[in-house]
Image 1 (cartoon, rainbow, N blue to C red):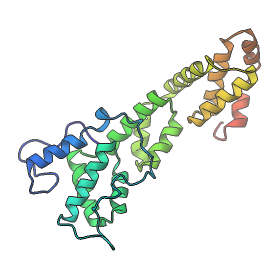
Image 2 (cartoon, rainbow, N blue to C red; image 1 turned 60 degrees about the horizontal axis):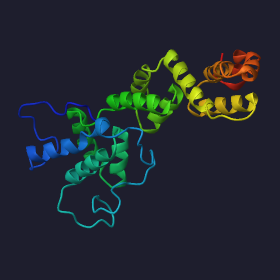
Image 3 (cartoon, rainbow, N blue to C red; image 1 turned 135 degrees about the vertical axis):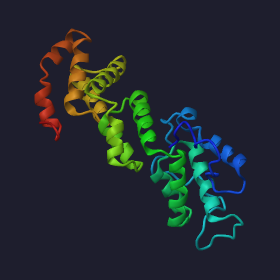
Length: 247
């Protein structure tokens, strides 16, 4: 992922290692620097197993590949910048794209190490932005966010630090906001509505206790019939039966 500032100033070597020099570097940086500012991170594409966006090009090395006048490093850098122009990527996602194109492990390490060094990719910044965007934009809880970061190759420790931005209070507030929004158009008996809304929160990664309390409180404020049903709900007992992590 992109760190907002780019490479250090002065006579820093061209981060692409290309003879094109500063003009090529600047163009590449402009394409890559769209990052979180230029694209909504909720626009995920096809996810971790998405089709190769470079498919059909002549990049790559390996059996059956036509001769290409560019070096393997040049091709690798072009693939990376194209990937980053579509949406922010982690180091693991870029490495996966390069492997699909037949780029050697040595060149992958060389190119991605350089991009790490100058801030073109930054998994910690990616994780922070991902957590903020997906929590506020989609209402995802920490459990779901952790799973998404893991799928994108973010180190567990890096992900844990990013997830600290979503505390228990923020998670409970987000759950209640989701329930209130869905409850405006919900139909059916209080029992049926309760089950649907708890299941909705579970799919977004909320622990059973948080989900049940959010729905109970929302139903209690809805009408007399719903309030009577909610009054009979024991969140602790239900959570203990529903959540294997409870207790």
